[in-house]
Length: 96
Image (cartoon, rainbow, N blue to C red; front, side, top):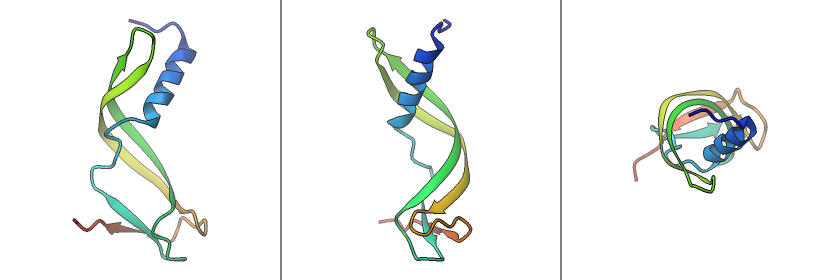
């Protein structure tokens, strides 16, 4: 079935992306800025390829009931405190 209203389709995809379950990375990573010591605030730019199950209501509302990350590429991590992206270290997350 083709969607004839591209604007509606774009809004549906945008809203699906915002609150989709299963969007956390498979292997948790923490970051640390070697320049300023920040451990908590980073801008992360990633490209993801996902398979999602969209459930549209009769009224047109969208709920993403399942999402699987098929591939992800982290492009850049920038420290929110000092603005540097070339001093970011990845730290393994310790199991609790």
